[in-house]
Length: 169
Image (cartoon, rainbow, N blue to C red; front, top):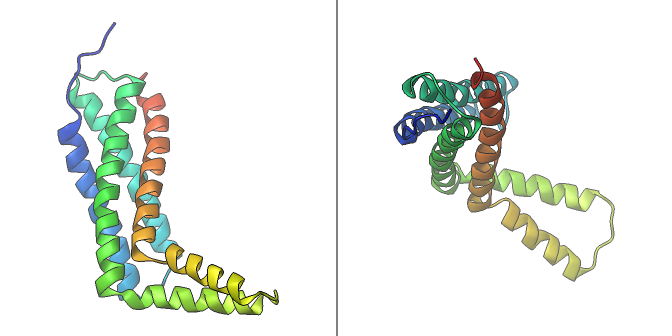
């Protein structure tokens, strides 16, 4: 039996914004705590993200007369993750470009220190290439892009698992 097709856009926008607010709150919390990582915040972020994406799939099923296919579940969850991830990536870019650019400088200094303490003898050309690559990988744009890709991939996995669970429930 074919399920009725209900647009998942409004649900994806709503839960995508919730997802973005959670991600932005984590970035701000790390900034306020003046740290680059915190186990408690990381656990809260992962659990919250899973909950938001899973609930977007469940909300879509409820709005769709309690019917959902795996494809529909994945669309709803993936769209939620993409919208939230895009908003988080935009905030990340602004944050690391204008609000906290020192964070990137600290990462670069540590990477340079690691490069020089590795004990490898490098030619000037190799050292220049390594520094050039390091500057690319530690740029606000690259960090934002990786954040977006990570959000979409995580959303894909969570929506697949959630879809498998709720399609028969």
